[in-house]
Length: 116
Image (cartoon, rainbow, N blue to C red):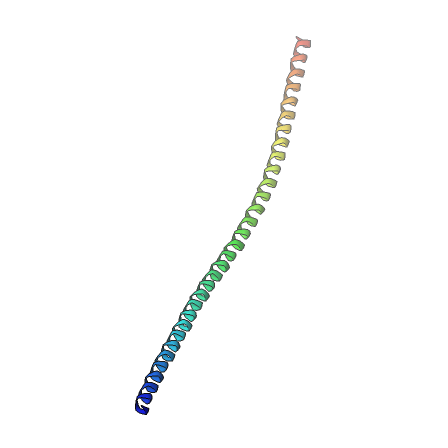
């Protein structure tokens, strides 16, 4: 009976050891799975961070381009205003010259009519 009991105890101990080994293996697998998933999440977050940094850099560059374009528009508007002023002045001078020529022509015609 003692031998049977020892055999039974050995089988129980062996089954308990096997169960403990399987539990340990399951825990290691779960830990490994968690570690891998954490690593993948971390890599994904790093990639997102890189994309955000790249987008931020592109946004800053776009803002610089926009600022340069606004400056150019301001300069072109000022140049256009100067050209319009210059054109108005030239038109006024041209009209004054035409008026002076017509006045001179009128004077010549009046003198001829008076002397005629």
